[in-house]
Length: 110
Image 1 (cartoon, rainbow, N blue to C red):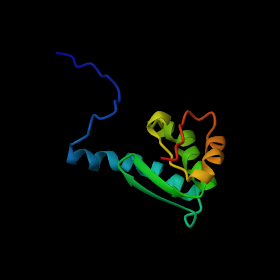
Image 2 (image 1 turned 135 degrees about the horizontal axis):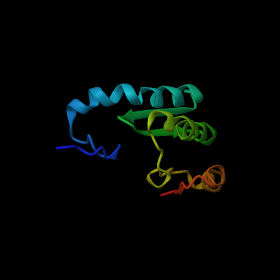
Image 3 (image 1 turned 30 degrees about the vertical axis):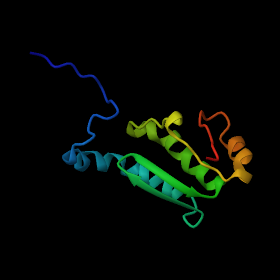
C-alpha cells in the first residue's frame, strides 16, 4: 500500500520528545541568524523549538522579526503574523504599530 506524502504541517511533532532531536538542528539557523541581526544588549530572546519570544527596544525587535521572515522559508519556516502578538508600553504603542505596519501583526498594549 502506498503512503501519500502530505507535506509539513504545524503540530506534527508536538508532544514527541524524540522529535526534538530531529527538529532542533533544522531550526538552529532560525535561532542563530536573528541573534546575530540584533544588538543583544538591546533585545533579549528565548526559544522553544521554533517558537520564540523577544523583549527590548522596538527597532531591535523589528530586526528580530524581519530576519526569519526573509530567511525562514529557506528552512521551511513560515512566520505567522496572526500568532505574533507584540505588547508595547502605552506610550510607545503608536510607534510600534507604525514600525510593524503592513506586516499583518496586531500590536497591543494589554
